[in-house]
Amino acid sequence: MAPSRPTGLNLKMNVVKIERLTTSDEGRLRAIRLRALQDAPDAFGTTLEEASRQPFEVWRRQLEQFAVFVSTTGDRDIGIVRGGGHEDCNGAAYLLSLWVAPEMRRQGIAAALVDSVVAWARTEGFRRLVLDVAESNAAALALYMRKGFVPNGTFGTLPHPRRHIREYQLEKKLEPEPPPAMNDVAGHLEVRRLDDRLMRNLDALDEVRAKADLAKYELNVARVQ
Image (tube, rainbow, N blue to C red):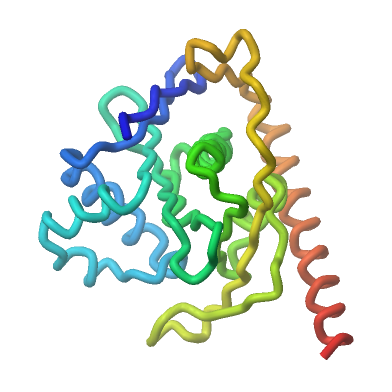
């Protein structure tokens, strides 16, 4: 499949683009994944030590197996997300590896990366999109729920020695893609950035709501059991 056309976000006069990596971008994939694993080791199943030992052919193979999207500004990669077929769920795709550099968070970049995987999954004909997220990651839970993901009743933990970190599995049903609007024909997405203070307040409110929704969900599950 040909690389997707970059989409753009205007943030503080800096243009942030989202593009799909190709099989020749294994160096970029490795670099940003190692940054993500170093910054947020408890958000991913793979450890920094494990990823650091992987040869370049493994990274190249990942680019063949997954749709990998990165957000960039200037010549810097500042965010990543991946999408792939779910080997255990027929008709479902998996969203994984979402990460945005700390200095670029709360500016809509993570949401745009999620949208990229949703669009890819629809194009590939998947009917559902699933993901795993740590219950302690309130910001990620709020983002995913705002994007239409809901708990599907599956729970898990990270691999040893981090089995104390519990994960929820969330999923989103994918409706048929609507016809493109006239201003989207060129393949560009223009997003007006909210005032920084307003964005922080909205994110904080979403995190509180996400925690409350999960608490209600767990209570209902406990009653059924």
